[in-house]
Amino acid sequence: MLVPFYGTDVISLLSTPDFSNPSVVNAMKAIQIVNMAGGLLFPAIVYLWLCTPDTNSYAIFKKHESVLPILLSAILIVLAQPLIGLANEFNSYLTLPEGLSSIENWMKKGEERGAILTEAFLATTSLSGLAVNIFMIAILPAFAEEILFRGVLANLFRSMTQNVHLAVFLSSFIFAAIHLQFYGFLPRFLLGMALGYLFFWSGSLWLPIVAHFANNFLSVIIEFLYRKEIILTDAENFGTNNTMIIIIISVITVTAILYYIYRMSDNRLHSPEI
Image 1 (spheres, rainbow, N blue to C red):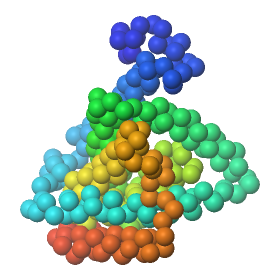
Image 2 (image 1 turned 90 degrees about the vertical axis):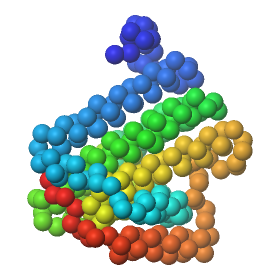
Image 3 (image 1 turned 45 degrees about the vertical axis):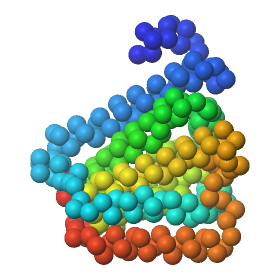
Image 4 (image 1 turned 135 degrees about the horizontal axis):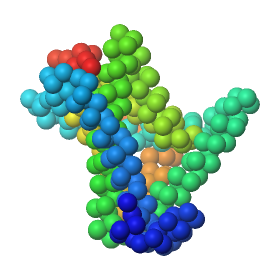
């Protein structure tokens, strides 16, 4: 698919990619967008179209009478950054049993490659590069991953198990594992749990989509500002090294917002079934 735009040289360039080459980075961004749209978003939409009643497939995108829950879902992610940083720290101490060391090493190598690729993607100081990153890292994954993991998988697990909490757990586990990043598993799992409950409590995908977008958008903006030397902390270290007071405040505010969204929902644990 890339050959018409980059020529046949792109094949050799991508076999041993040099991420200091802008053409290679742009080609990898194109591949990332195609993978996300074609590998996650398109199959999920086709499934909803073919395998669910029209009323249910449209209901998960229902409008809210108030924008407050949607705004709170975005604020929730911002206030949760100290907790996400703490989860990252805990994750760094985790190791798999010796019998699974080969899997752990495989995931760690995958994470190292992913970190190099992410670094190449975020290494931009131009507004056009920022716009591409916002679309590729924030907008597209928010829709693709939420439609797949919450709109399809969480609903399927709820139908199979007749247990919403187990459905949230299973879909969150797959959501975290599929990224193949060992040291990022725990924060992604906890994020997936929060997104799952936002979906089931509201009966709509808009809350987890907005929350997911806010989480990724925050990382993109922080890294951009860091590269522009406007702030001193990059996206990887943002939300880390917090005092206990900040962590406690984060726990209290996040819990309060989640409880408020739960209390104001008319669809508690009763989102449309697939």
